[in-house]
Image 1 (cartoon, rainbow, N blue to C red):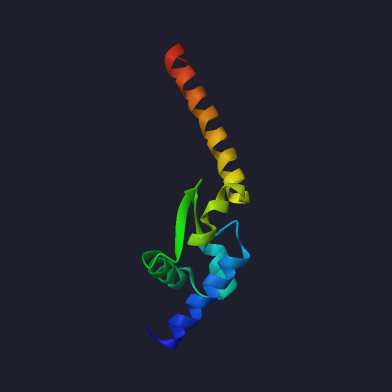
Image 2: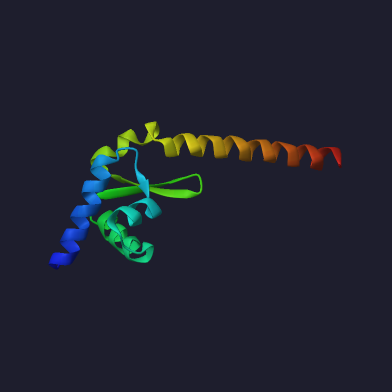
Length: 103
């Protein structure tokens, strides 16, 4: 692997070290000042290497350092996900009521 890869990889790792709550690809892209498509490739490699992991939280895919993954439940992304799930469940309940009652 070349020097540029190692520099970008180290930048992403350092960013995730300082953001224990995890970050999505847009946030990481802004912090490393690279296009999302480029960052996506680096994240895929880092994930394959076992350095980072990702979780689908609500509509976002959030990335964590593997050593910090246990902290994801305290993430603001988790709270957003919980709110999103609660809203989704309420919408489903309403749709089911309409189906059952024929309205």
